[in-house]
Each structure stands twice: as structure tokens, then as C-alpha cells.
Length: 419
Image 1 (cartoon, one colour):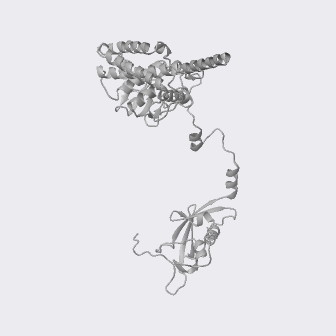
Image 2 (cartoon, rainbow, N blue to C red):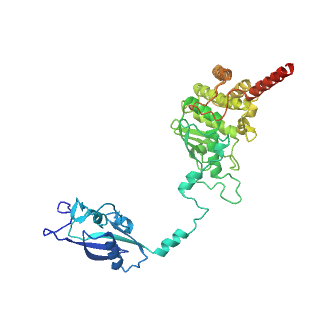
């Protein structure tokens, strides 16, 4: 249809109101009536009601060219006096606001089509009075009430850093894990919580923030249908995780081979750090193992520092929660021995020895220890590199502070006795 020959219908040349044919359409039926551009909103709604013999309690909505006429049947009341409207001199300003077609109608050889939508008043009342199902939540309420429980397992203030973090989590929810009544396999919801727990682990956060890492997705390896996992099994190997696109996505095998439980948490954390090391080096060479070893030291040292500061969550240290308390019991010396022993086992599978990288691992241990001692002397709050975020942990040893306070009280008592 050409729009060049179309015009806004308003008046004939003699000043009379030009007739306008309107085709009302309702449930596949149509009714054509002759109106004009001065037809009011209330009039056109009454015409539509008459055309299809609709009861007075029926709620109508008329649509013309995709827009509701009169805001759903209710005229928009205007304000001001009866001043002449600048765009149509034959009607007043207030009357213009009540027009069904305030902008006019495109004049064509065909009638203007108006779509009629009708709802019984009883139906609307019934729906408004219905009580919503309490077992079903809308998307808005779901977002507002979502509180990932496992994300708080490390403490009430422990969340991911706003800049360096895992952006998304994906459990293996396409399998029927935990759906059958007799199944003891953990549900996909628990797998998702475990991924969030890994992401908010203070040790993992320390590693990610130190290296300013952003990982697109942290996901669960499908233990049933993952092709890479099956290929490794055929080769006699065991795939625990893989890194795609240099950190775009990291997948970790969460479940045991019999699918009855999750793997030990400390092993999962070690696997995640292993995959994070692949962000820089793809091959399992000496550079990779050096980086991995240093990251493992940082992970364990973070938990050691929190434990020494007396940071407790529900009566447990973060090292107990992470399952690494035995590795950090002797401080940095124990951590170095544990990491080197781990590297000996892992590097042997790739025909490498730990002797060539051990000095670099030990050097990183000394750096971390020196930084911690310096922060203790200055009494500053140890953040995690997030610009003030400290998770409520103070670097000065809490037990030392308690001892110092006790000494001050003892001296004060002695002075009072001598006086």
C-alpha cells in the first residue's frame, strides 16, 4: 500500500466533519460502523459494545494500530479551560483529550480496523480474589529471596570479589541425579552449592585476586556422558577437570565414580587450582608446575593465617571446613612440605622431578611469610586485594591481643595495690 495518497481525515472542504468507517473485529467477527474523527472515547466503546451485543459489565479494550484507544476505555481527564486546540480548531482542548482518534486517522479506501478485546467482569473479579499458590514463586520473588546457603559456609560476609571472580555456575542438571526416591546420588542443587562453595573459598579467592582472574563459567563435568572423560577412561587415565579457552570455562569432576557422593573437598579445591594454573600454561611442563605449586602454597597459607587469627565459623576453622587442617598444622614449614610432596606425585606422572622448581616454591613461601609478619607489626587489616574487603578478619593475632590486654590489666592491678 502506498502512503503517498493517504492523509489525516479531519474535515471536508465545506467545514463539516468527514465520515469515517471503522471495522470492529472481535473473535473472528467484524462489524463496520460509520464514525468520524470527533468521535469520543466513550462513544466508540459504546459502539463496540452494541456491535457485538456485549453486557455492560464486560471490560473492553480497543486497539487501533497497536495502541489502546483511550487507555483501555477510561478517558484521560485533562485540565485547564476550554481553549481552542492548536491542532484542530473545531474542538476545545479538553474535548481533544477525550477523542478516540486524537491524532486523526489515515484516510484510505478501506475502513480503519479496531481490534476489540473483551473480558467478563466476573472473570476479572474471580482472578483478583484468588489466592496465589504458596508453593510457586515468581521470578522477581525468586531473585529477592535467593540466598545461596553454601556460599555463606565460610562466614556471613564471605562472598566473591566484585572484580575477580567466577561469573556463572553450572551443575549437571540435565541428568536425573537425586530425582529417584531410592537414589542416594546428590541432587544437582547440591552440586551447584558445592561450586559456589569452591568459588567463595577464602584460599581460592586469595589466588584469584592475587592474579586478577575472571573465569566465565565454573561447571560440573558430566560423569555419565562427558566425551573427554570417557576418552580418558579408555586410555586408563582419570580426568578430574579441564580448562576451556584459557579460563573462559573451567569444569571440575565433583562426583565419585559410583555417583553416590561428592569427592573430598580438599581434592576438589586442588583440582580447581590446577585448572586455574592452565589459564597461563596449557602443557604440564615445569613452568606450569611452578605456578601451580605457588598457588597451592597461597591457598593453604590463607587458611593457615585465618586459623591462627582465631577466625571461626560455626565452631570450625576454615581449614577444617576445607579439609586441609592437617596440612597447615605446623605453619609455613608444613605447607611447604605438603605442597612439595604433592608435586612429587603429580610431576612423576609427566616424567618430571620437583628438584628444579623447589627453590621457586620455597621463595614464594618466604615472601608470603614476610608479608604476614610485616602486616602484624603494622597492625593493619589484611584485605584480599578488593579495595577494602576484609571479610571481618584482622591480621593481628587475636590471641596476642588478648594476652596484651591481660598484661595491661595485671599491671594496672599491681599499680593500684602499690598505691
